[in-house]
Structure formats: C-alpha cells, structure tokens
Length: 340
Figure (cartoon, rainbow, N blue to C red):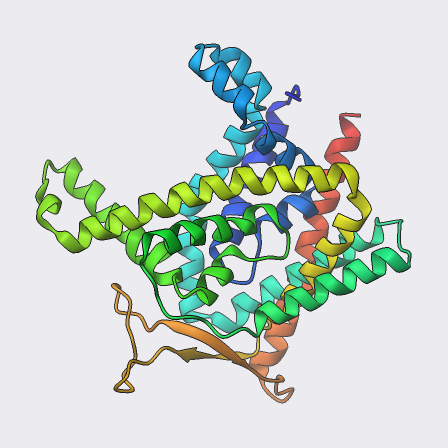
C-alpha cells in the first residue's frame, strides 16, 4: 500500500490534512468529505484498517520499519501533520471568523459543499433505482440530523467514551459532522472547548514547572474527560474504518450513493441564513462556556432578504466556495494524471 510520493505529493497531502482538520472543527462540515472530494478517501479508510492485530504484533516485536510500510505510515503521518498544523492555525482563524463574520463563513462552506456534491455526482456512473433509493435515504438521514434538538451536557465517562466513538464519525463518514453530532449530544463545549482549554493551560503550567493543577479538582476532571474522549475517538476511528472498508469492498456503489445523499442532506446544517438559539439555565440566563461565550443549542433558519447587501455578498461567497472546491479537485486530478 505504501506509495512512492514526490515532494509535491507530500505537500499536497499535508494541505489536505490541513483542510480535513479545519473541516472537522466546524459544526456541519465533515473532514471525511474533504477526503472524498480530494480523491483519497478509499486510501484513507484502508490505511486506518491496517491498525489491527498484525500492526500490534509488528510493534511488539520491534519491527518498526515493517510496521511503517504495512500501515501506510507516510500517508497517515503527513495527513496527521496537516491536521495538527490546522488545529493551531486555520482552526483558530475559523473560530475568529465564525464569531465575527458568521454569515459569510457559513456561506463559503455552503458553496464548498455544493461544489463537492456536483463534483462527486458527475463522476458517479451507477445511477439506478437501487442507488437512487440509497441516496434518498442518505439525504433523509442528513436532513433529519440537522433538525434534532440537542441534549443536555453529560460528563459521565461512559457517555464521554461513546461521544468519542460517535464524534470521530466526521473523519470517516463524508457529510456527517462529528462536531455537530457532539452539539446534539450536548457535549461539544465540554469536549472540544473546556477540556482542550484545560489541556493547553496544564501544558503551559508544566512547561513553567508549575504542577499546582494536581490540587485543582475541576482541572483533573476535565483532563480525565479528555483522556476518555480520546480513547473513544481512537476506538471509533479504527472500528468505523473496518466497517467502511468492508462496505466499500462489497457494496461500493451503494455506499457511495449513501455518502452523496448524506453530503446533500448536510446542507441543512450549514445553511448560511440562521440565528443561533442559545442555551438558558432554569432562571432563563444564558449559559456560558469557560471562555465566557454563550453556548449555542441550535439554529433558527430563515430565507435571505434579497434587498440586503450582505445577502448578495453571501451568495458571491457561495459561488466562490463552490469554484474553490472544483479548482482543488481538478488540480488533484491533473496531479494524478501527471504521475500516471
């Protein structure tokens, strides 16, 4: 499975990892969709499937070079590098932009998803009644998820482990946003904001040789929650990749039809024209996260006003987002042909 890659291939792969990391951070957008549109989804899934008993034996026996080739280590490591870079750069920029220019960010992502749907649908040649039915099921599933009401926050460790399994779905299932699923489960702020902030703060203190966090019960609880969530994410990533690998091997066209439907259904989540509905406590007061920001429960969607300049700017960004995805996809296709 290990492929010979040129320097440009490696740079492209890191960039794809950056895009996957950014997509995973935004509720309603799927990192798996990036992999699907960019043409490396199947290699990604089959590489994750190599994290199995054979990999464990190679690791225990100290056969690291064999493990590297068996698990397609260069491919995975370059993707992970891109995701790490994204987490400390693009993801932070997205947080800033969503806070201040929410309409325009959602419009750009809406356009990207539209461009993705067009690109992957035009190359799908196996449209028949069966696959159209699977696509419709995917659309219904995606739309249904976008209108579910979020649950209350729950820090029970078994539930946190389950959130890890489900939350990582956006990495492997195009169109299913792991971040949005965590919002529906009520634990987005706990797992992707509060716990991560606790880790950053702890690492910065340890770097300064300050170990006072051992006496901070709330900090230790958040770190424990993060560890359990990470364990659940790893479990979900490996198990889902094996399931999807089996489906791609035996039911490839049906699986692709469902994925196209899911991506189409996810448009309801990233619809640009919406107002946030914030979480309230029993006294009707806004609930805040540790950063002092209001916690969003869901969105109230509405049709755009065509007499407003912001609407036309958002429409322009939708078109720009669609064209950007098509340009990236065509650049990847051209790169593959040049190496053929």
